[in-house]
Amino acid sequence: MISFASRAGSAIQAFAEASSDLLIQPTLRLGVTGLARSGKTVFTTALIHHLVETHALPAFAPAHEGRLRRARLVPQPDDDIPRFPYEDHFAALTEQRLWPRSTDRISQFRLAIEYERKGGWRSGPGTLMLDVVDYPGEWLLDLALIDQSYAEWAAATIAGTRRTGRAAIAAPWLAVLKDLDPSGPLDEVVAERASIAFTAYLTALRAGPESVATTPPGRFLMPGDLAGSP
View 1: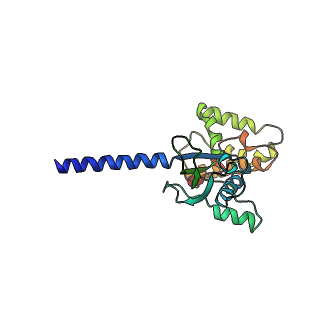
View 2: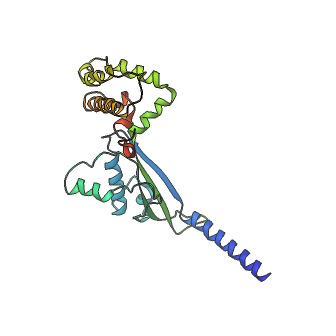
View 3: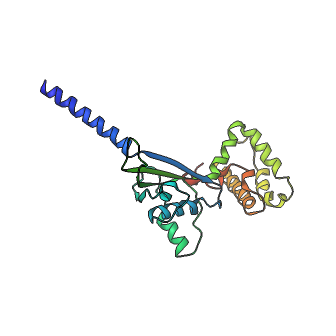
């Protein structure tokens, strides 16, 4: 009986401690996404810097009301996701005077934000775990492909090369397509050559006056961990 009561008491205590942790340290998960060169890396770096350095943030209610105590970077929770390289980006902006490199894969950071509660039935200090995920916006463009078959997408993409100003840009890729036999046996070397030519076409569009948003898939421009895969 004593052993059973002891185990039951330990279980209740463990449950209470876990529940207390959830109440005392809630977690908020946010995603930051946008097309390349839209400024999401600069925004994310500035967000971390201003919170960690406790700069004036008049539009942020806890800071404006004097309830923000401090924020600090802590180990991010997902071991299989790279850490957002805040220190490298901050050094690039402040020391090298260079824009940070574009987001080409998912990364994440966690901030522990310590604050004073407004009051009510629970008052006093609290901690919010803020997880922010930096996500390439080009990958979101590919969601539009879900409702298309491959044949529909291919026909629309090739038709797009006939738009004004695209003929010269598309010529190298179209030349590669002419030498392909769709009914022939699979040849990974030939397929890779076509993939490289198509990627060059998209890259040229992106560098021109048009937005690459008009020509997915964005994964060709930002393959991330799929770089070099068949």
